[in-house]
Length: 185
Image (cartoon, rainbow, N blue to C red; front, side):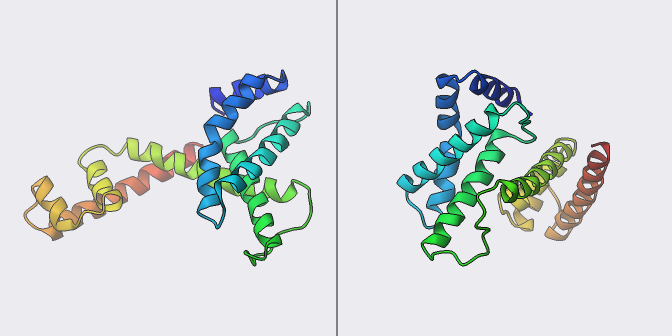
């Protein structure tokens, strides 16, 4: 867990209004994006976020509560679940949402999110260990969406096929680094 999260949890346990304001300010944009890109409005995002922060506040006050993921992850999972429930009530979402008010479904969903977050962090560390020119080649192709011709010219390869072969070697190296980092964890 990050220092910011530990500090926020400690301050919320002390019933700090400053910590709650910081929590609202830090993660609200994420929730607005979630709600607005899924048939909602900013006002609905405010309502859902208020409910999620209240639920988080109540959980943190319980002495046995231990935060096992980032606050951002927790709030995202709660907000997503609350929003899906509201959409189902409005007949705008036809998925299978449990009607139970318990947090069991949220905790299961959070476990999935935490696992994905761990894999993403592992991949980030593997990318850091990749080095040049592989890091730039992979970023140029997958993130910047550059063609192999452009990448080949940028790195001085004689043709796109040579750049493609280099990208393949870089991916193999990244795969090896990823699994090494994954094994360490």
